[in-house]
Image 1 (tube, rainbow, N blue to C red):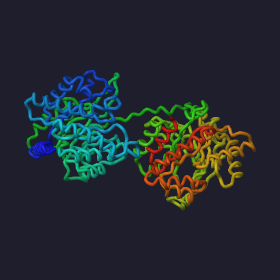
Image 2 (cartoon, one colour):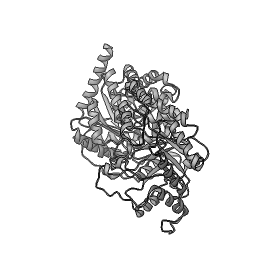
Image 3 (cartoon, rainbow, N blue to C red):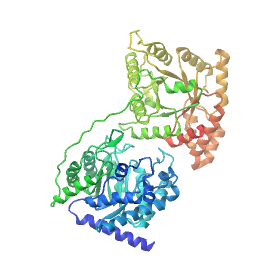
Image 4 (cartoon, rainbow, N blue to C red):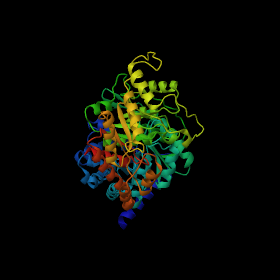
Amino acid sequence: MSEMGDASAEKANKFLALLESSSVPILGDGAMGTMLNARGVNFEQCLDALNLTRPALVAEIHRAYIDAGAQVIQTNTFGANRFKLAAHGLEDKVAEINRSGVELARRVVMASFKDVLVAGDVGPLGVRMAPYGRVQPEQARRAFAEQIVALAEAGADLIIIETFSDAYEIREAVAAAKEVTSLPVIASMTFTRDDRTLLGDSPTRVATLLVESGADLIGVNCSGGPAQLWRILRQMRAVAPQARFSIMPNAGWPEQAGGRIMYPANPDYFGEYALAFCEAGAVLVGGCCGTTPQHIAAMRRALDEQSTGCAPTAGELSLPFESEEPFSSPDRPSHMAQKLAAGQFVVSVEMDPPRGLSAHKLLAGASLLAEAGADVINVADSPMARMRMSPWAVCDLVQRTVQVETTLHFPTRGRNLLRVQGDLLAAHALGIRNVFVVMGDPTSIGDYPEAMDDYDLVPSGLIKLIKQNFNAGVDHAGSDIGQPTAYFVGCALNLTPQDVDREIKNLRRKIEAGADFVLTQPVYEPKLAEAFLQRYADQFGPLHTPVLVGVLPLYSARHAAFLHNEVPGISIPEEMQQRIRQAGEAAPREGIQIALELVEQMRSWAAGIYIMPQFNRYDLAAEIIEGVRQ
């Protein structure tokens, strides 16, 4: 280890000395995947495995970037971690693929007779970390360490950790690198069109987190074109003026033409931005997706011609944003309605809208839930009367971005008859087909206790308005609305109420108004729930309306005690509370097990379940979904 440590220190000094000695940024290379694809390699293949199967092809691309003037080339190991390689059955070849990537790049450097450094390339794991995924931080760190050890031992001059969208994941990657090697570490994140990471972090927050991680260089890569990264760089440097920055943009936002992915930014444009990046504080520049040796050559020429510092020469690049809206067809029926009609066991999960402008974390959670097998995402409306983003806007974002159907919570409280109908028209135009009608929480318990709390319709009245008017093509006054809506309407139910007769009476009123499905409060005593349904059947006949039973996984002893003692309508048996108390730190796992046991007890009469994840632990909800599906 001492010899490896000495070699790493020497390489670190070499890279850092190169940075200090240059008056203009060091130039990196461009895209590897773009070049491989242009040579006939399908993106569905394992590109990293080409180090073993087609080394000459990879070497040819390395050589092209060196000839273009790159001073740092990245190994073809972006996806060579245990998780991504497992998708190709290659998880046992982590060390071999990474070693071959470094050795291949180094052979090309030696053959070029140029003083070029080799950066060991490390990308994201390809799986989400908790709470938006099932991979725990210690698992992620071990996977990164495994890859980075192989890169360092094979002779990489530095480590570049790039194209991350999760600040917590990149923190684990940097920590792993610092634990297993003394090589310089570059930490680079990617941003969406709105200058936020996929999980909603701003450039200033990212800069702060990356500096705190201990990375030697921090920066941005991929994302959009040069103009966006120039803008982000300026924001990051404002809060971290002493940091050293790496900037490697895509060649603009990708577009599909003739079955190929095309990037609009040309090489000359990149040459201009190389100087703008320098002026903004970058010490390492290069390219990402869509860039070629021609882009790098243009940057090389621009930097070489600028002998006395840099001058900004770039303006903004504006590209239109186009999105598909597969859920907006006027006559599209509810997918959930179709599944229930077919007798499928439907899984619905509740999510709260964000408190501010960013919906990135919610979308990441929705994506995880959809991948786990959720049929529909329920979006709450101002839960606990707390101010949040409008739920029908969130429904639209989830349906367009994640491609999973949503159910809109639609409280009557706080809405007059005009607003109710206007919101229904808007939601339908956005492709929302499922609405869950509730009274809503009183404003007196929330952020604005003095806010208006009136309403023109009770839940059964709103259900009737939707089913008998809007779904017939007319509004409350009987005026034509152009065409019938296709709403599938749900109502609320407590299966274990204090006053059983009153709850049955309210349910009957909602069913007669036309409710299509029922969502219940969390159930912890299935026998009491069955007794309620039997009592309803004794009075009105069997309940044929599909019931999705509430499942709220217990998280801790304190959580269970709070629900039992302070939340109206929830009663948790002492035996269940005792199991959670005895589980200690493993209480969340015990909560999952209890939830699965409850589902099995209710599966014979329930049409599905309605999961309510606590504390945004969507990873735990996903485990319940997978357990139910199995």
